[in-house]
Image (tube, rainbow, N blue to C red; front, side):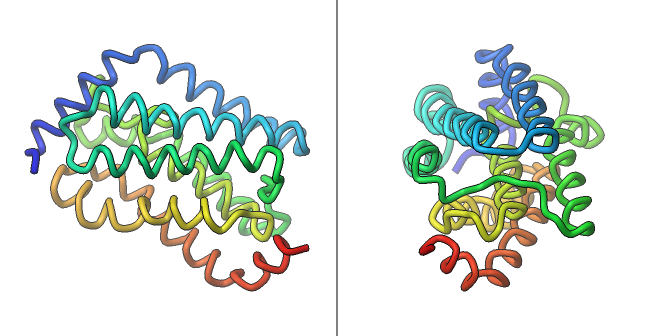
Length: 216
């Protein structure tokens, strides 16, 4: 088991090594989010899936296998995120997932708020005393990227793939409760935990409807 100091050290070294990839991934995420609201449709869906596939593959390969070798369970987590990336690639043609903005007002505004929270991960981290390069950033690190993906999937219900949804939940709920927050002091991961719980509730609530939509 690594210490909190070692964990933050690995994170800082990783962020320094990959700069400016963080800026690129967060800008692309912002552009895709804009198009999701302004021009939803097949092309936007495909671009979002391609983005998520790339970022999760990057996290699995670059973060866990190359630069984060000292992290506990790095091979297991690398495999998880690479599988998630593959599922998003497959869905570009399978079209089980249809990203959209929810029609109901409360869910629409909640989705907007949760998406903004994933973008604000670094700002919230700064308020907690975590400055660059020891920042958790959307697109290149697993927690905000998972939170972003789950927010989009929860909004897309019933047009979702249960497999990728469940795999993301496997990371989003247990990790902040048992590792990230109590062991390493990554309190900004409370965002992912809240999004994970909300996404789980939405999945359970709509489980039968999702299966019906996929079979059709």
